Image (cartoon, rainbow, N blue to C red; front, side, top):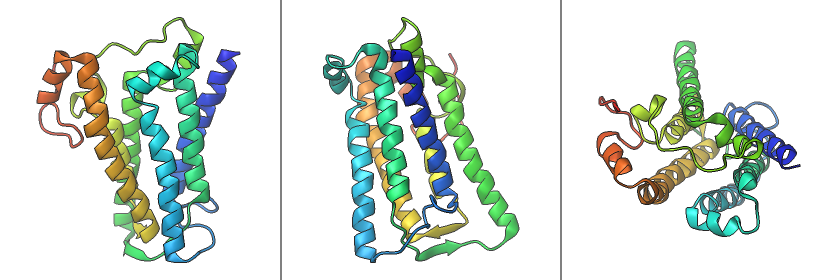
Length: 237
């Protein structure tokens, strides 16, 4: 039963990620600029509320203190699956109920420049998924925990894009958020809030947890590899 739940949760998480990509590409029905237009103040209030409802549990459930209490109610093997299910469902809700704010901030008409921007968008997503694959795709989505006896976090190791930046998932996401040839007020609001959230949650919360959990090894890594913007130095074991 736990395996079925984990599979369902992973599917919801992956669908949420796919919906986000379609949302950012502004495809019909689910795109960031699609749908009926309400008043700008009302749209902004709804959108900020949606982002808050996504960000709050997403951050709280990732904290070690919450996980310890949560595991008194949820089996260790399903703790990550529940988190992935919640994140995917909330992400889809944000995209589906998002209210467009159609004012244009920039619009690139050159076909060549549009191609460059879409290539940058794809590169951001590629960097993000490379990071997930580098740490353990099955563990990240809660599948390895449910299908094996190993439910603990993978040991600290530096692979792939983690050799040039400490938080490549956030780096790739931020690039994808802003790499659009037609930026509206609504998409700028979405990108700005998620960028700010990614930076603050990563540098203030995740970094603190990693330093507390890993100790000196992470401090050495932190001293040599930048957090979000890749630098010229490459981590070498």
